Image 1 (spheres, rainbow, N blue to C red):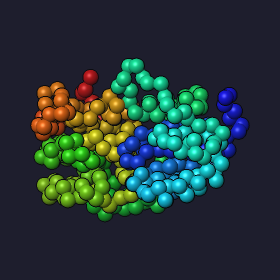
Image 2 (image 1 turned 45 degrees about the horizontal axis):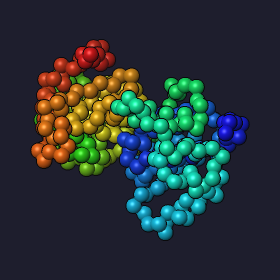
Image 3 (image 1 turned 45 degrees about the vertical axis):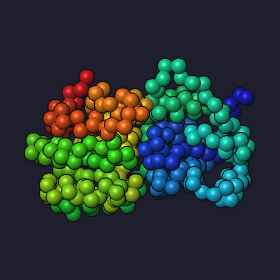
Length: 333
């Protein structure tokens, strides 16, 4: 069927559940929001990610899909989508939903496998979009994520309350959903301490409520030069924090993907994850990984514990970059 752009008045993007995975789909939304500015735009996400779109005037509706909900709740939920009469449905979750709500255009149920393998998830999502809509280029402008003025003001207030003025800072995100993906607390502390000492930078510790206690332990060492915002910001407020950072020092986590989307300089510390599929994807994204000698990485069936993250030393991290006149210069090939 030939794609007729003039027929597109209502668009639905079915995104994913985890926050980091949803952020990886934002470039798809950016293209659609850019190319169809008059269309009513809706998105399906998991419960954790719904606030990512809070206050964005370009997003008409956020439909929350909880994959653990009962069939009794799912059936009327799908019926509600069908009643919207969408013209274009882009399903990045690969569900049966597009077949059940009868849009004019939809992504296919299967996509031809990539023979080369190792394609980054961002580009897999873009490939899926191209299966239904032959877009020209990616959008250099970000439409899918908007930070309302009141959220920017709240973030600015938190920073000034801590330090009394606007200081340059790095964002350190020591958390990760999987314990095996977390770099050591002593490593984060040493690198942050050196950033304070060498470059007179402040440190903002970012993450969710589950990371708050560990971050408090770091603040006790770094003292007043560090601010613990773990669990104290919404997702759009976290975006406001990350966007102004000199550097984001992160594990494989949602803050890494957020910094990549915002094109903030990123140094990601990787262990068991596939960095070619899930690594930093911004123009200024770099990573360190030492999993070649980790038996748990080389053989997932091995019962040994991962030691790949602990193998990364603070000195290796510090050697990977320097800050010159307020800008990060990476020393990684």
